[in-house]
Figure 1 (tube, rainbow, N blue to C red):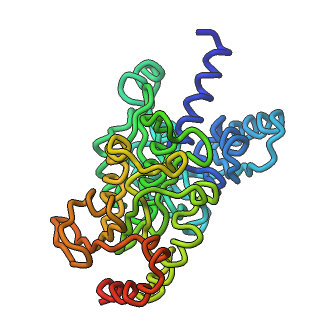
Figure 2 (cartoon, rainbow, N blue to C red; figure 1 turned 180 degrees about the vertical axis):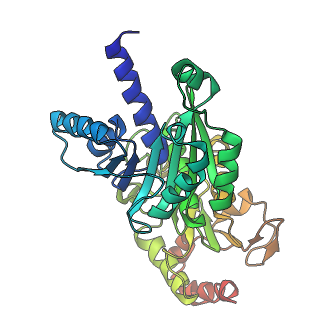
Length: 354
């Protein structure tokens, strides 16, 4: 592979790391000035601070950024084991193949400093054994011991791991809510890229719509599938049914930002036809992942399809399951057709309040 192709591959790998790390529109600290800062600023609309302990490397990085016409990167001369920034200065921090440049006795301090200055997460990318031996077999650098790294991260908080070619990626989160938001975004990407059902997820209004709300919600509402207006407006429960739902939430002192709302099927069906069993089955893994991520205390199936999905037996009766309770209710659309039952319907919400 020639030099030009090597450069292209380096940029592709860094872009993939940034995509996995979910850093769009964030303030980002880049450890070890290099191409990643330019890619993050240019392609992910990040406001980047790129640091290095070497003034020479910083000057090279500045020159590269100027050639690209990038002006939303600050370049600072910093020791990553003793950063001058205040706590939680940046949304995310990324160390791309910088850890193996740090002396072994300073690596723990390095990791803790990165964690100190981030609000959401740190991303540590480094070479696996094969990759390291190919590049640094004759150098004085010491390969990253990933078992030691995992022990260090475990002392900070929960993390997720990914692999890309000859590199391992560790994403360590600051809080549980950040971790759940990250995992829901992963599910959302799977939902939007799903093409299992031939008529669905093609373009508006038949495109998919992910669940919405608080990742740490105690209450999770599960309905059938989004209506046409929902997919166009990108809002679950829009207009009529949404107004009924909002009244119920208000009655129990909740709102859309404090609960989580989703559907058993993520797509609007053409011409408002009924969703088919195959479509429900195809969407099943997404809902299972949502429940696993949210970990709600109570799941509220809304309507017959959701009632059947959860294998409920009686309406408006609390059911105990292994990991959560279930309280099945009529779909708000039923009340639109039977407005005289609104007061009686809202009274059934009181169980959730209690």
